[in-house]
Amino acid sequence: MDRLIDITIPYWGEPALLKAAVDSVRAQTSPDWRLTVIDDCYPDPRGGQIFDSIDDPRIVYRRNETNLGVTGNFRQCIAAASADHTVIMGCDDILLPNYVDTLTQATARFPKADIVQPGVVVVDDAGKPAMGLADTVKQRLLAPSDKRPAMLVGEQAAVSLLRGDWLYWPSLVFKTATIQRHDFRDGFPVIQDLALLIDMVLDGASLLYYPTTAFAYRRHRSSASQLAAAAGDRFADEARYYRLASQLMADAGWKRAARTARHRTISRLHAVSLLPGALAARDRGLVRQLRRHVFEGLGRS
Image 1 (spheres, rainbow, N blue to C red):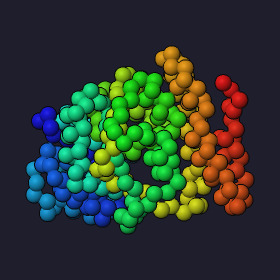
Image 2: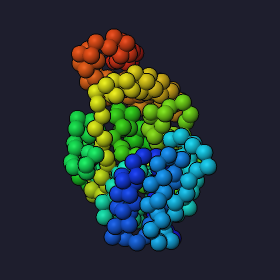
Image 3: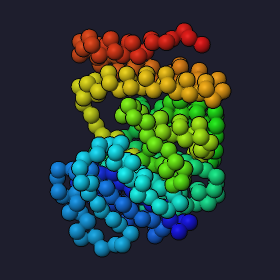
């Protein structure tokens, strides 16, 4: 049991992408996994039908009685895990064949690691490489630059994540006991993963960067109009969370982390990158929201 990894998939989305995700689990070079798919009442029945032809006792499919929403279904996935380690995989992402072997090796080499981030490649809707600006910043500027494994703990981990969240949540492996001691904060739907990770770090959790590439994260193409429509709510959510994080860091005595949260430099730069599109679209409301996010709180030490 100590080698087993519980893979859970909170399902809501395109059935064909779910099938690709499930197939990638079944293609693992290691047999030491168990898969639980929890369907949050997605209206297309084809997702559930995928499992009609799968005869593998390691694979369980279940459907919620009512729609719980993203956070509620994530909670179901975390509660369903019982192995020593757990991953909450995206229903459209892909495990590379070496994923379970790589994470088993990582957790054996670094048994104190509570959270493990493996190397990730980014793909588009069609599964082709898609390394855009956001992922270039994540992987080349924010993630540990050393090609060797790196362990981050305490304020060091908090500063790294609050400077800019370089993790890929669906690829992370958690000690099950550690993640089950924590819960998502209500009221932060856009940034709930970072909020939970920071709470875990505050509670003593350690973060391991393990650079062996083992996961394909799907970055969907989105129209500029869709991004613009969501941008205002996204940045309002981020600003509220970073204000809270700054206070949490100050309460912990982590002065550098508190300053990092107040500055939220990468979040501000992200808003700056969207300003030209908002200006070109003559969306005055969005321009005001983006400018507010960029300039709010600047000058405070």
